[in-house]
Structure formats: structure tokens, C-alpha cells
Image (cartoon, rainbow, N blue to C red; front, side, top):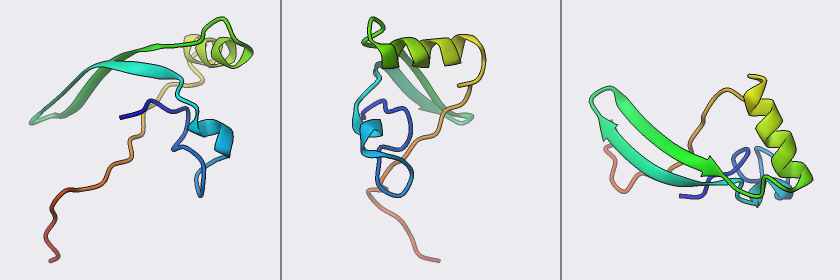
Length: 75
């Protein structure tokens, strides 16, 4: 999946958020949840520098994912 700053435009943010900010290098799921690892890209751009600074200072400190279930049960 794409690593986006927000949820990628539309209802949750602007169209500029559709631009990927990084690449996932590892993903795994166990009984505790999802674990991901990745790296930021374009750190030499203004947006890349701002995102990195926000993470380094602890202001961008969470993760939210969007997904589509392949199967589900109504119940």
C-alpha cells in the first residue's frame, strides 16, 4: 500500500496528500496487531524536510491506515 501523509485526499484531506511520502519496507501482523517499517522519500524537498522535522520533533507521531476488507460478515 502507499504511504501517504494523510488518508490521501477526498473527505480526509487535500489532493496534495495523494503524493506518497515514503516506502514500506516490511509489514507483518500477529495477535497483537500490525507492525510496519518504512523509510521516507524526497527528504531533499521542502515537503520532505517538513515531514521529517515534524516526526523528529514528535508532532507527527501516529499511524493511521485505510483498507478495504476482502471478506466480511454482516452481523
